[in-house]
Length: 269
Ligand SMILES: Nc1ncnc2c1ncn2[C@@H]1O[C@H](COP(=O)(O)OP(=O)(O)OP(=O)(O)O)[C@@H](O)[C@H]1O
Ligand SMILES: [Mg+2]
Image (cartoon, rainbow, N blue to C red; front, side):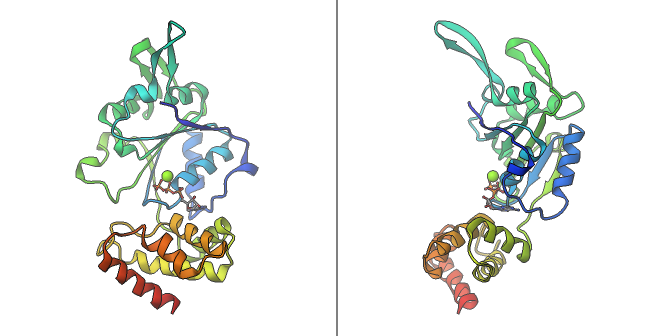
């Protein structure tokens, strides 16, 4: 499996990321000390953006792997492939990151199978090695290698949490939806919409999030607020943009939808 690769160009080119707290300095400290980092938080709250930003800032290449339950250890590590009649070994994204001293980002790591998490163990403790059984190699991680994983603790069932022996190998950072003023900053920057209209959308998002757990599985993400603001900035009427970007993506239940629309009326009149 190919992970997506982005080349680091330095802090000036880093994708926009507005910190909520000290996450950048904790990440940097982990990087300096070769410690792996686990990001926990709801969908669309900035985890992927944060990793992309930090990789650029630290001048590291980034290999991103979206984990799923079919992903095998070989997809991460590599396999023998037939090329022009010859069998050649091809590194997977994790092995490449280990060799090159890059950042390997495992998105939704709880979706990965057990054989995958086991592979991570020697890499995420003081050994910092990757055993490659097929080639009988024991790769030592190059300086600069860092393992980053993320997951959403919200919608996992009990079977899909990380084992303590895995999670206790990572420095962990919790991501939450940002406070109003910061979220306004993020959405305004991302969408180009004026602050007044962005503030109204962010207020609505706060009200919708308060319903999490009762009617909604997940609160509306910053990503969706950015979508709504982008549509409004393009000229779409606010109520249409809200329905398309902040209501329909949350539920299929007509009653719940009506309840959410009442909230829209309460905020926008
Ligand atoms: N702190 C932030 N700084 C800049 N942009 C942000 C921030 N938080 C959220 N965003 C915006 O929200 C969008 C979604 O963020 P991102 O893709 O990083 O979410 P995620 O936490 O990785 O979600 P998922 O768990 O679904 O993968 C980004 O594309 C960006 O526009
Ligand atoms: Mg993500």
